[in-house]
Length: 293
Length: 334
Image (cartoon, rainbow over all chains, first blue to last red; front, side):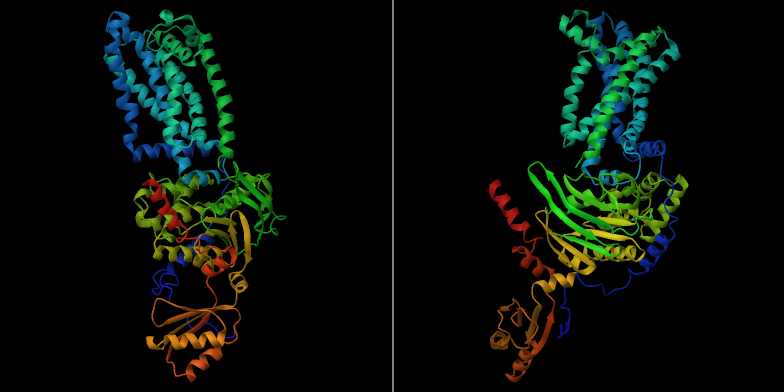
């Protein structure tokens, strides 16, 4: 270039700024980068999962409205179903409460599990999902951690239902021990069931789609069960479906535990359901998670 | 570690990614040296982001090979993730959380203790001028602040290689210049930066070397000035003092340079693309002899818009490309 650029023609916003208020920042950034003491030791699977769980709790702190589904919704369900169906189905509201509360307890928690999937779907549609996946952490931690964080929501929903039930006359024979045992078992089941929603959220493109597909699976799981009524009046084929429905297995066991009748075989069956759910949907979810584009 | 420290930052060989029938990345061969800023330039949908996501171990290649810092992306993704950071195209922060909470979250996931993550987070917020916004939710940040926080979280642990996917898309010019300064500082500290952009002047401003990608293929590679010289030696721009002299000046330029002279919107301005750089001084002399008062006369390298036009046969990809499309959409909506 013999004739050097006489003037790099004024390209308004493209050239260097004329005011020099920015550069001091560079010096500080340089120091911060130099001051990095190298990479800390990799976060273990537990630390990473707990950190993601902590994130879920922070989101509750900043957006408390999201607790609507685990506070107002359970109260509404309990009150509504008891008074609407009570007289017709069990002869009296008092009797129906004893039957229904364990069912509603399971039903509400199972419904609330669906929201874990929706949060995940929202993450995927934003850039944060890529950042999470580019980190050198145990990969399932994001999913496991979100599910752990959601346990807080489940506990809240469960406590509210039991409190409302108690006010309405629910008196479990199993006492506090039975109720706590049933509660813990249900929390484990909710965690396990959530892997289905996790898989769905990773598969579908939008939050609405995730909700739609989840509802499609959830509705038969809830109604083709012994939550609301004794299946004896149902046609045979439906009774067969109700029997193998894991939700029915859980409801039966919760009723037993709350009634103080400990049957190891039904607890074992629930444990088996949980193990199968995690063993099937966990790896499928991770497979999709790793290949998500 | 020792064996891989001599390896280039990125080396790809026939890298391919398909989404269904569409080939997003169509056999890219690339060697990105360590140090400095490497620009990946191309229009929307050219395959830049897909290529970056494969290199950042987020997508598995469908064909070819890619090594990042000497490690194969398919065989050793976990090792690569320890050495790189990625700042995605869309702000990759949790918008419900505050600035410091985001940094603590990512710091913890990088292996810092709670206390360590908090301390490191505040250090970075301070350096990036975000201390005042530490306890504000990210959804209340401006676009420029988000970008800075985004880059800060990529630097919690200084990466060997930092991928920035369109770091200045959608932010105001002042913030853009701030981000440019940040990127230069990060490179000075020894990190290799690979950045994608659809802004030609951004690649020109920042990149030491760059690759131009279109339809998933490499269409040019080199330093910005090498690319510019590929399409001729430069552009002449001049202005006459009096608009009435312009026609005469245009005629003189045309004769002495043998080039097409463009009459700009400004009634005093003329420009011409030169195939060689000889003749410019003769033209200036001829203008003087003809008594044309010249206000400015400059010879510069062509800008990357012109490079892109020459390489792809299509006009500049950003803006100009999107507008007719938007019109079309409206048409069909009616």
